[in-house]
Image: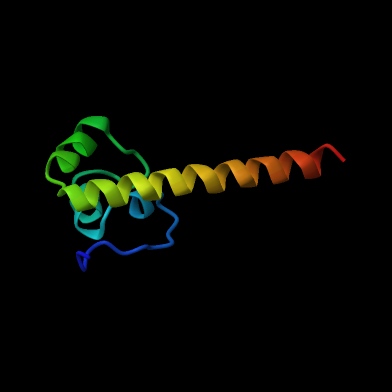
Length: 79
């Protein structure tokens, strides 16, 4: 496995979705709270197949965690 494909817990969700290499490219090009689609697409073009698979997996995991949190919050709020 590529040594750059690591899992990071961070406030910026892009750091969770993308590999370290791609994330650093994005951070250099944009403000961390304003992900510009064109800049993100540039970084994605430079990704290896392994980085793409890793990022897809992490993005899906982030969505799943978000859905679990949403359900728990809705359940708690409806009581």
